[in-house]
View 1 (tube, rainbow over the protein chains, first blue to last red):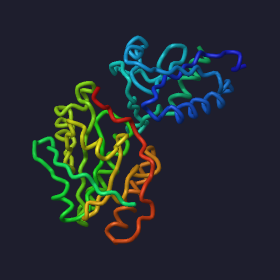
View 2: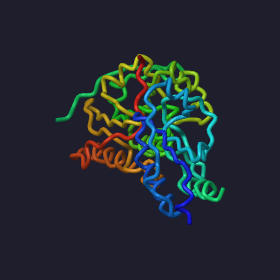
View 3: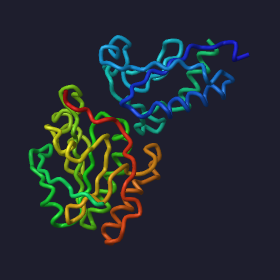
View 4: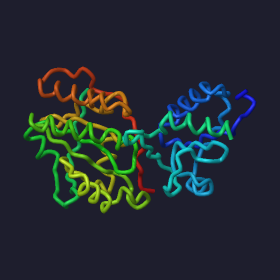
Length: 110
Length: 172
């Protein structure tokens, strides 16, 4: 049963970027769809540049599933908003929900 | 109450200075505080450029203004602005608000933050381009409606909406 295999899921966020709410909703929807607990998300606020560097935080929002970013970024760490890309190449402030679901599926299967 | 727009003169990426009051003398002007590094600004960019194109034929001028601290955020430096304009062949002047005084005078909060200024230097609309940065079909509807109303000289249906985007990166 999927609920028995709970990957650690972190959502790292910064208050200067308004994308946290939508990302959290997408993440919860993906977890629910996979039979996982939608409330099992560890919210971690990045408040200082120093913290961003220490955490290798490439911008808000950043999701980590078992410590791995489902959308790896080469960006320098810092308090900024992250640029994601939709499947058709459009820029977006949030990760593609389909990609999130796929990463979660893989984490559960691992 | 309709606020009077703060006049300004800022250089674009070629060093040419654009003065707001000279532009409003011939018609409405759209001022968009925007930048290079914000996903919201990027998501709305094409829609705003389309508005500049479509309403340019109706006498509306558009200015994009980058107010971000380019030292702390190098992707918003003047060099990075120039590179973007050159790479993408923009149809809108991209102004550099290096001192951040224009953004402060307008009370701009985010990128993007959109203002429509009429021919009498009055701020007639302020807010987001439309209701959803994720949906290209939204087509900057709120901004288009505001321009239609200003050009028709009627009361605005929606004079203010909440700007959505990245916080402006102020200098320390």
